[in-house]
Image (tube, rainbow, N blue to C red; front, side, top):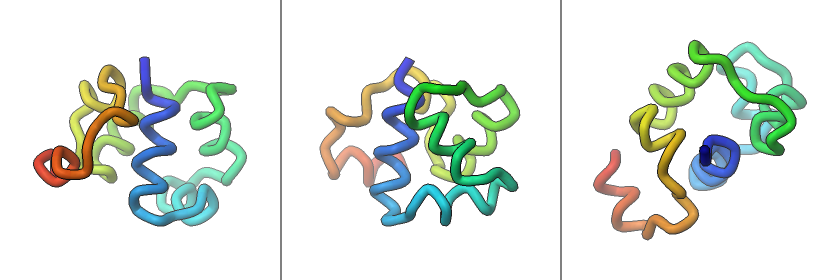
Length: 78
């Protein structure tokens, strides 16, 4: 699964810090940071929220390595 790296890629693409991004989800920065660092895994409800927030499918969030996706393809996903 690629969720940890994909969360980091998508957050950075939006130009947000972990602090800025964790607030809309009602979690603290360390919780979100734990997801990015593979220290913790989000539950399905949180994965759904991330999917909606980033406007990518759950399938993409979990299974696709976004580090290999070119910018033009990001535009097509939106």
